[in-house]
Image (tube, rainbow, N blue to C red; front, side, top):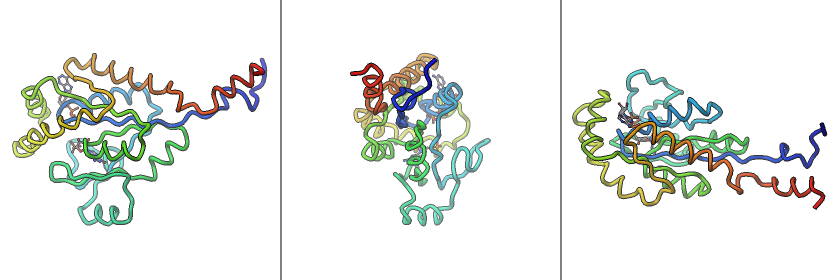
Length: 216
Ligand code: ADP
Ligand code: 5GP
């Protein structure tokens, strides 16, 4: 078998891809993201900073970097974030440096961020895949928020109140997934990601390498 040459297609870089997933709270985004990450373990995950308190089993540095409001504002002033937003009364932000490092190294980065943040990321990384998860109905959204058992009545009311405004931004996303049947929604998300990996723009040099191999 021939040794890999400078023109080997294996030697051509694959650029990292941003997969950005947004939804009204309770639509099932975390559930879908968890499934995707279980299958594609190579994903880099963008661990956000937040001023909200940890919920359930959440771990600092894994699910979020949990910061005080003062710490968050100091990092924001220092230009630490690629985007930030106030969501349901708490501050959330995406640290910029780790994302840039992952993309440069060809690693795909998964973002689980709110709608305002996703649209900011779109202006920075327009080549990303932007996916909006919809609940099948507002009633089902409320059922899921209550069933999750992690939020107070006040927090649930706030999240439902924000949901309509968030749905109004869905048209700016590239893909819409209605999370009614979980398996179907998970299949759709998987298909979007897998198809995105084959984009021409994410394989610069591939065609040149093939043409060189073929003596063209
Ligand atoms: P989000 O991350 O969007 O806030 P979660 O993933 O935490 O939402 O889901 C909210 C609740 O709804 C969870 O209890 C989850 O198990 C449940 N859930 C998610 N997807 C479905 C679905 N397709 N059908 C029924 N329940 C779902
Ligand atoms: P939760 O508090 O339920 O984990 O998240 C509330 C909302 O904040 C969700 O829509 C979640 O996607 C969003 N969020 C999490 N991290 C970030 C972030 O870094 N930036 C922005 N803009 N939103 C985020």
